[in-house]
Length: 288
Ligand code: PXG
View 1 (cartoon, rainbow, N blue to C red):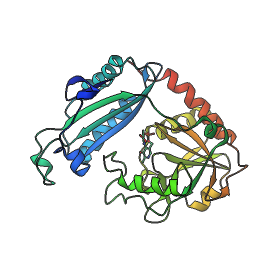
View 2 (tube, rainbow, N blue to C red):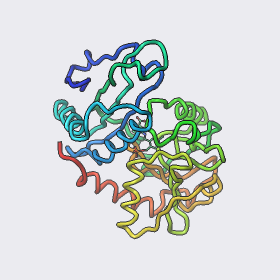
View 3 (cartoon, rainbow, N blue to C red):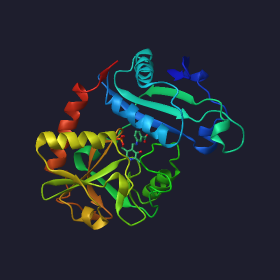
View 4 (cartoon, helix red, strand yellow):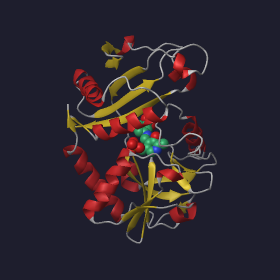
């Protein structure tokens, strides 16, 4: 496997960063998880825009402009002959000494890995996921905005551990007010009386690229969709529920906290959204 590392394409065995890299020492950095389908990088420009906004929020100077970054992503896929897979683009604060001070780091470290993706098993797309609410709250937007896709995932990892302890593959994280924020690596949606509802970024959700795609799909399909605060009750009593994320795509949820959602089977609107999403990824995207 060939990895892009600071302007060079190196073998994965050579793709190493320093133990003094602040991405490792402090989680000081940002990333994107991107998919490639049939040689098309899905919504690359949107991912790069979000990355640039994450960089701005943490006052990290982007090492490459949008076009150069896009070219590096595509070239990494080409060099690995990757037509379908997962791209991880990471920018850290770079190497410095053993102090927080980001201004003492010389230059950002950039790397791009283009690899395979492991999806949820197909049975969960067919039958739906059973998920739980965990006690770990989503970090408050005034502490670390969840809109920044940073290398600090410990909050989500703690929630993921709790989910696993409860025998679930995903978990709902609530915000400080007790409203549903999102899942550990996915956005969440409910369908109620024909309308799709999802928490706003201000409730602690990442502005997911897949989530944005679902807004477009809903508009195209004529399904009303809006952002609103959701309680656990709203999910328990929804007609349908589904999650979205770069890794998961669109996946139905049929149980939360041992309550059956709707009929207990993936719902019809979820099905229409999933079908439309799978069509879009094949046609929309940047050809490598
Ligand atoms: N919320 C959180 C906290 C995420 O980490 C999403 C929502 C969905 O956003 P996108 O832009 O992907 O629609 C994410 C994305 C992984 C992995 O390796 C995680 C994500 C994306 C890709 C891979 O587990 N999280």
